[in-house]
Image (spheres, helix red, strand yellow):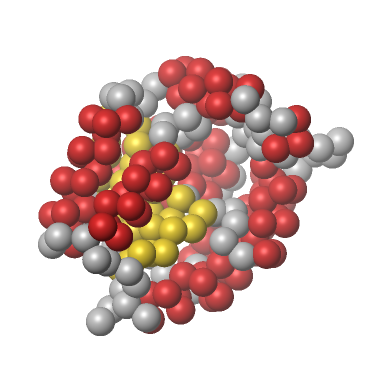
Length: 214
């Protein structure tokens, strides 16, 4: 049995992390073998890189450096967790993957789209998700949600380096995600993430049920 690779993407505060947890529970209740993971993360190396990338420090990280740090985490993640799970016939649900790097570093940071895509291709070893759920909403609303979440965390656990960027940065990211969706409508399904959790969960279940035949 071949596995299935599904990714969850979206701007800050889109609710994708909540929805991936609910989706995992839904699929497991229907007897499917599910692995849930995230980027950057998923492996010890990826988690260390996550700490560097998502927490504000006393040093700057250039857009180019971001790309290669994300790529290093993804290469390890793909090789040691995602591909082995797929080979076992498992459904892998991943919170962010290559689309995030394209949206954030190419569109958001203004790096060469072609170059970022090539780095992503190499890091993932050519692996692409079969289905991507893109949770879309106005960035102002997403950031409002994100900062409410961050406020409830301790200082060292806030992971707010990207949230603190200028509003136009986040708008370019959203534009990038929507451009990806327009280019691959068969793979990327856009959901209105401004709805409440239950309404969005129902839509996610409908898409996954149809796609996986459960």
